[in-house]
Amino acid sequence: MQMGMHTDTERCVRAVQSKDARFDGWFFTAVLTTRIYCRPSCPVVPPKPENMTFYPSAAACQQAGFRACKRCRPDTSPGSPEWNQRADLVARAMRLVADGVVDREGVPGLAARLGYSTRQIERQLLAELGAGPLALARAQRAQTARLLIETTPLPMAEIAFAAGFSSIRAFNDTVREVYALSPSELRARVPKGRAASTPGALTLRLPFRAPLNPDNLFGHLAATAVPGVEEWRDGAYRRTLRLPYGHGIVALTPQPDHIACRLTLGDLRDLTVAISRCRRLLDLDADPVAVDDQLRTDPFLAPLVDKAPGRRVPRTVDEAEFAVRAVLGQQVSTAAARTHAARLVTAHGEPVDDPEGGLTHLFPAPEALAAVDPESLAMPRTRRTTFTTLVGQLADGSLNLGVESDWAHTRARLLELPGFGPWTVDVIAMRALGDPDAFLPTDLGIRRAAQESGLPSTPAALTARAAAWRPWRAYAVQYLWATDSHPINFLPV
Image (cartoon, rainbow, N blue to C red; front, side, top):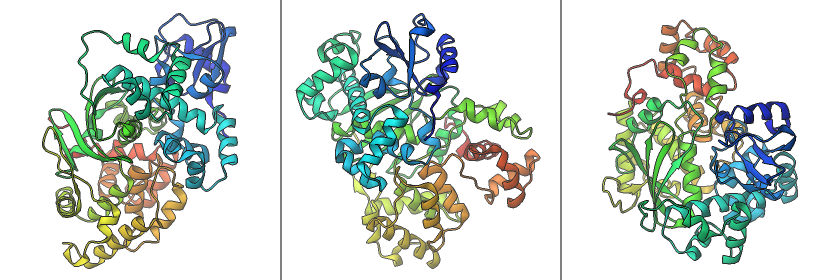
């Protein structure tokens, strides 16, 4: 079992006393005298150390009888970076909880996806997070409910069921217990004059740990955008989303202290999942200070980090989609890969209505792609075999790239597929699986950047040098790629 930061009382007290926002989401401060829990950066006067106790999750605070601070709103902290940098059972379970699996499939469904018994899952989560899967899901429902209460004019009954509660009573009791306010009192606190969203359309802020450099993050998404599925418009990256209960459209705009997020959902029950996937896409739960501090220890990487700190790894909202696109992009230019993907979208994607125009389809599901005639694909025969094998295994479930997947096992499975070499496997590991240590030593852009930076440029020598960058080699890839003038490295104008 891993021991979280909340067990280091002295370090936690220092973070609280200095109001250090870098630790928001790493742990929560519960104040014994007021029975309130806060994020480390709470603006109020810090309590005396003897009155503080620390928990690893908001759910653990709530389970211990503490309510959320009305000033710092700890439930809106960035998520713990632990769940994105680890591949053990607890991390995989937390990624599934964030993706709404407990609400849709219950704890047995969570356990089945992970291949463990419900008792094992509950025991490990309780030991490390101080709360079991039901309590963690309940805390997430409370946060979703608060968001809907404060940003929409929806009736409370609709909000209750959209947030995942089984009854109005459970909704009322949970909101009152967590926030010490009734749902109507929460809504009454919203500043007057704020523009009300129309049902199905939400505007919210996605927090992150500073610094965040948006250049390569949004540049990559915009430069590789598949027409009909993605676009860059008016300073925002927009795309369609395939969600459990329907589809959605999201617009994400970088701001100095948050990402502005505008969501249009066919079914509001998809809100929690949509937010989770957008955060994952933009790597918003990363700890950039820890990443950059380690990479700076290499004298050749240090100037690249100092020039533009806070680079994130652009990821994906749909792991299967990204794997397909990685195959389409093998040994061709970015423009050619977009063209191949756009043809598939037009022929096999599901049409959607975009109120703002511009987006037309969901990216085709593996089941639809598995039915494609290989002879209709404008690519070499060997790559057709790679494509058809991949989509066939994704469609029948023999290959799983979801958030619960075991990184090492999935890499091994991918390497068994025809046409899958180390580059394709590692780019899928980096951007779809979310492995922060994925590395691309054979990538031509990386080798060229390494040579220009004074690093070894042969794959073997570069891999040996990169051992000192672990477990953050995927971030080193972003800094090395950024030395090039390719459009993926620049925020679109």
